[in-house]
Length: 155
Image (cartoon, rainbow, N blue to C red):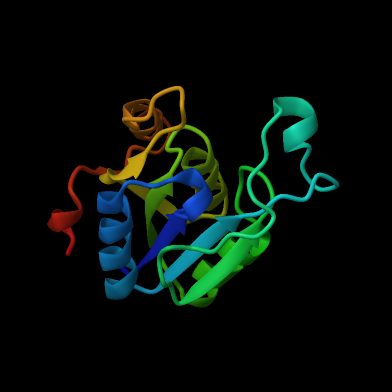
Protein backbone atom coordinates (compact mmCIF):
# COMPACT_ATOMS: atom_id res chain seq x y z
CA UNK A 1 0.00 0.00 0.00
CA UNK A 2 1.45 3.34 -1.05
CA UNK A 3 0.98 6.05 1.55
CA UNK A 4 1.14 9.83 1.36
CA UNK A 5 0.44 12.66 3.80
CA UNK A 6 -1.93 15.61 3.72
CA UNK A 7 -1.10 18.43 6.14
CA UNK A 8 -4.21 20.59 6.49
CA UNK A 9 -3.74 24.30 7.23
CA UNK A 10 -0.85 24.16 9.71
CA UNK A 11 -0.11 27.85 9.36
CA UNK A 12 0.55 30.84 11.64
CA UNK A 13 -2.91 32.45 11.52
CA UNK A 14 -4.43 29.36 13.20
CA UNK A 15 -1.85 29.42 16.03
CA UNK A 16 -1.03 25.71 15.98
CA UNK A 17 0.57 24.16 19.04
CA UNK A 18 4.26 23.41 18.56
CA UNK A 19 3.72 19.68 19.06
CA UNK A 20 1.33 19.66 16.09
CA UNK A 21 3.85 21.45 13.89
CA UNK A 22 6.61 19.02 14.91
CA UNK A 23 4.52 15.87 14.38
CA UNK A 24 3.26 17.14 11.02
CA UNK A 25 6.84 17.87 9.95
CA UNK A 26 7.92 14.33 10.86
CA UNK A 27 5.12 12.83 8.77
CA UNK A 28 5.72 15.13 5.80
CA UNK A 29 9.40 14.21 5.81
CA UNK A 30 8.73 10.45 5.79
CA UNK A 31 6.08 10.21 3.05
CA UNK A 32 5.21 12.08 -0.16
CA UNK A 33 3.31 15.07 1.17
CA UNK A 34 0.95 17.90 0.33
CA UNK A 35 0.31 20.85 2.64
CA UNK A 36 -2.71 23.07 2.20
CA UNK A 37 -2.70 26.73 3.14
CA UNK A 38 -5.97 28.56 3.72
CA UNK A 39 -6.10 31.99 2.14
CA UNK A 40 -8.84 34.58 2.09
CA UNK A 41 -10.60 35.89 -0.98
CA UNK A 42 -14.11 37.06 -0.16
CA UNK A 43 -15.12 36.75 -3.82
CA UNK A 44 -14.42 33.00 -3.62
CA UNK A 45 -15.62 32.16 -0.10
CA UNK A 46 -17.66 34.61 2.01
CA UNK A 47 -15.98 33.99 5.35
CA UNK A 48 -16.22 37.57 6.57
CA UNK A 49 -19.73 38.23 5.28
CA UNK A 50 -21.14 35.05 6.81
CA UNK A 51 -18.91 34.43 9.82
CA UNK A 52 -17.39 37.83 10.65
CA UNK A 53 -13.95 36.22 10.49
CA UNK A 54 -11.40 35.61 7.79
CA UNK A 55 -8.03 33.93 7.46
CA UNK A 56 -5.11 36.07 6.44
CA UNK A 57 -4.77 36.96 2.79
CA UNK A 58 -1.13 35.89 2.95
CA UNK A 59 0.05 33.05 5.17
CA UNK A 60 2.43 30.15 4.63
CA UNK A 61 2.57 26.57 5.82
CA UNK A 62 4.73 25.87 8.86
CA UNK A 63 5.40 22.42 7.41
CA UNK A 64 7.67 21.88 4.44
CA UNK A 65 5.92 19.43 2.14
CA UNK A 66 6.70 18.13 -1.32
CA UNK A 67 3.93 20.38 -2.59
CA UNK A 68 2.01 23.27 -1.04
CA UNK A 69 -1.43 24.08 -2.43
CA UNK A 70 -3.53 27.14 -1.65
CA UNK A 71 -7.18 26.71 -0.80
CA UNK A 72 -10.12 29.03 -0.29
CA UNK A 73 -12.73 27.49 1.97
CA UNK A 74 -13.04 24.33 3.97
CA UNK A 75 -12.37 21.62 1.39
CA UNK A 76 -9.21 20.93 -0.56
CA UNK A 77 -9.08 22.07 -4.19
CA UNK A 78 -8.95 19.45 -6.99
CA UNK A 79 -5.16 19.86 -7.28
CA UNK A 80 -4.76 18.07 -3.94
CA UNK A 81 -6.61 14.99 -5.16
CA UNK A 82 -4.82 15.14 -8.53
CA UNK A 83 -1.45 15.13 -6.75
CA UNK A 84 -2.27 12.02 -4.70
CA UNK A 85 -3.54 10.24 -7.82
CA UNK A 86 -0.35 11.18 -9.70
CA UNK A 87 1.67 9.58 -6.90
CA UNK A 88 -0.57 6.51 -7.13
CA UNK A 89 -1.26 6.77 -3.42
CA UNK A 90 -3.67 4.27 -1.88
CA UNK A 91 -3.88 5.66 1.63
CA UNK A 92 -3.60 9.31 2.62
CA UNK A 93 -2.54 10.00 6.20
CA UNK A 94 -4.15 13.24 7.35
CA UNK A 95 -3.01 15.66 10.03
CA UNK A 96 -3.71 19.31 10.71
CA UNK A 97 -5.95 22.02 12.02
CA UNK A 98 -9.70 21.90 12.64
CA UNK A 99 -10.34 18.16 12.76
CA UNK A 100 -14.09 18.80 12.82
CA UNK A 101 -14.18 21.12 9.77
CA UNK A 102 -11.27 21.45 7.31
CA UNK A 103 -9.67 18.10 8.13
CA UNK A 104 -13.05 16.38 7.92
CA UNK A 105 -13.81 18.13 4.60
CA UNK A 106 -10.49 16.80 3.29
CA UNK A 107 -11.51 13.32 4.38
CA UNK A 108 -14.73 13.50 2.38
CA UNK A 109 -12.87 14.72 -0.71
CA UNK A 110 -10.27 11.96 -0.42
CA UNK A 111 -12.92 9.30 0.15
CA UNK A 112 -15.02 10.50 -2.78
CA UNK A 113 -11.90 10.34 -4.98
CA UNK A 114 -11.43 6.64 -4.21
CA UNK A 115 -8.54 7.10 -1.76
CA UNK A 116 -8.35 5.71 1.77
CA UNK A 117 -8.30 8.73 4.11
CA UNK A 118 -6.74 7.90 7.47
CA UNK A 119 -6.60 10.43 10.28
CA UNK A 120 -3.76 10.35 12.80
CA UNK A 121 -5.50 11.23 16.05
CA UNK A 122 -2.54 12.73 17.88
CA UNK A 123 -1.71 15.04 14.95
CA UNK A 124 -4.90 17.09 14.84
CA UNK A 125 -6.53 19.86 16.81
CA UNK A 126 -10.13 20.92 16.50
CA UNK A 127 -11.92 24.18 15.88
CA UNK A 128 -12.93 26.50 18.70
CA UNK A 129 -15.94 24.21 19.24
CA UNK A 130 -13.65 21.38 20.39
CA UNK A 131 -9.97 22.32 20.42
CA UNK A 132 -9.04 18.79 21.56
CA UNK A 133 -9.94 17.39 18.14
CA UNK A 134 -11.90 14.50 19.69
CA UNK A 135 -15.14 15.45 17.93
CA UNK A 136 -13.37 15.44 14.55
CA UNK A 137 -11.68 12.10 15.21
CA UNK A 138 -15.01 10.58 16.31
CA UNK A 139 -16.73 11.90 13.16
CA UNK A 140 -13.84 10.58 11.06
CA UNK A 141 -14.11 7.14 12.67
CA UNK A 142 -17.87 7.12 11.99
CA UNK A 143 -17.58 8.19 8.33
CA UNK A 144 -14.32 6.60 7.18
CA UNK A 145 -13.34 4.09 9.85
CA UNK A 146 -9.61 4.67 9.40
CA UNK A 147 -7.95 6.10 12.52
CA UNK A 148 -4.36 5.72 13.68
CA UNK A 149 -4.16 6.81 17.30
CA UNK A 150 -0.46 7.75 17.50
CA UNK A 151 1.90 9.14 14.87
CA UNK A 152 4.70 7.02 16.35
CA UNK A 153 2.82 3.91 15.16
CA UNK A 154 3.67 4.73 11.53
CA UNK A 155 7.03 6.48 11.83
